[in-house]
Image 1 (cartoon, rainbow, N blue to C red):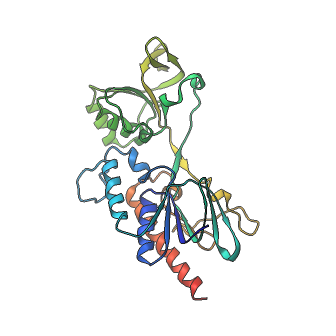
Image 2 (image 1 turned 90 degrees about the horizontal axis):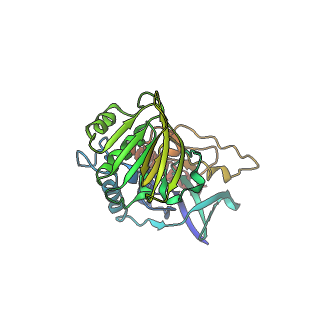
Image 3 (image 1 turned 30 degrees about the vertical axis):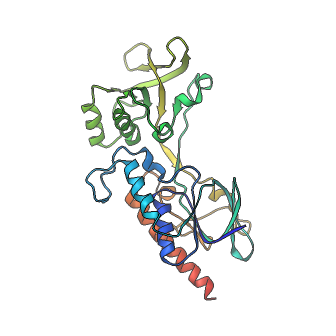
Length: 310
């Protein structure tokens, strides 16, 4: 079984930062990632509020900055999905992966968030590759395709702007009569009126494959109009996200399944910490995640020093 001082679960900005800082504390560190490094940065059109050295940098470009930085440290990068964490003997954490099992003296969970799902009549008959909840599942993004995006928040509008880079034709269907995204994102979308169309008070009523056109048909109703249909290549659903808490829910501690978390990411289980979006809910920002990861790693190092000195 693979043994580490610290296991960091999640390879987004919080997890990468935590792993780097832990290495600086001379800890043997493993960084676990089920998919690809970078987390939700792969979804970001532009990152403008993180001082990366450039005024505007795409999410994918910033991922490369993080990856290049990580390569300077002796972090063991493990591409495995951790499905459970348990507290074993001698206060060691046991991590169960799909490929292997691991142990660690301390764990930082930086598992991020997962998208909210949406049930639409007809979805079960549409090929799964046509329906997506994140832009990153479309990457590499094909050029010249057509999309319907359901949602009115930052993610929906940001996805549209990213897809527009690839000569996509996009329609955003907003259920409310206003967008809940940042005003600057709505302005930028309106400036792209050659390739992005906005529909307010619109609700999708069903979807189906259209074998004649080779596309999918998205039927929707908007205020004061009859049912309309759009023939598109893909449907992208952006109706919010929730904390990916499934992993920490697997952990029991002396018969107690309730994990309490302080604002700094420390939990009621010694040696277990949370960092990044899994803590912050709707505040999904790179700078916040980086700070969380840094602090969690410093707390973990302090905890491990205390354990060794007992």
